[in-house]
Image 1: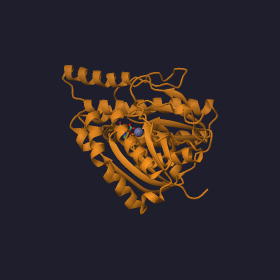
Image 2: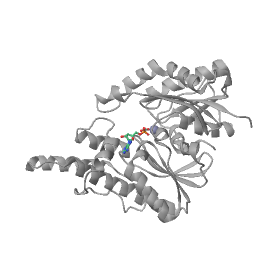
Image 3: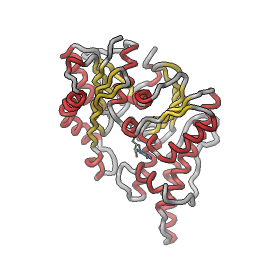
Image 4: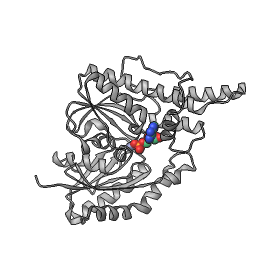
Length: 340
Ligand code: KG4
Ligand code: ZN
């Protein structure tokens, strides 16, 4: 097969990103325009504002991406876009740009799954060996995913309430840290001690599911109780205790899945994969179990279009295309039904 260049578009949440990726591996450009500054003052992503801002910048970002990659639209073999899951108003912006490009240029259109993108981000710098296991941890998702074969996913565990990044952001808000609070808690946690009692919800349950909303409530209770007693909260210690509990839960379930399914490769994916403690302790776990650990570079952990270009290549190889006239965004999309 000749070299395949994919123009990938990602607008599922608050990042407008466009990339050009060759053969799923060579990232020729990966332009990311973040809206964090805009949403910061509201303490979280405001969907209405997010979609409007995507509309304002997307065409510039497409141009910039092509320019940086030093290619023209004629050189592109396919257009790939995140179809879902995500905020529907945000997704629609990328989807409509991709449909228009595909139709007017007469190039194949790929409607890719955001989580598949997070997982295949790791395939840019390493190689996924099947079967593999991915711990997907982001602002919207906390999932343990078996990757049985190319684009064949099986979700074996899921959060029953909040996503782990969401819990981080909510706890950060309680500590008056600006959105997104995950990285700030991570930094604080380095400085403190594990002195507060945070419950490890569902850590001993027989399944691979997670629950984080109780931990968030535990933090809120600790803060309220301390206030009532006139005691000062030690933010660093609370961050350390919370983070330790979160990583304990994530890795206990991950270890169980690696052992029970006899898997030799672990992938950390999604924005929370940037977490220092999670990375360090996942590495120790991988050593203990003699499992290969793959973690994408920071640039490919949080939302970006290069990861969509990476997974898009496998859609292309498997000829999983979609009709530019009928494609629609889907706020929830089934990861297990990409390849029938
Ligand atoms: O994957 P991502 O960029 O966007 C979604 O698809 O959700 O993940 C963003 C989430 C936010 O909740 C952010 O607070 C969290 O990832 N996050 C972290 C860290 N870096 C980002 N959480 C904990 N520790 C970090 N170092
Ligand atoms: Zn994401």
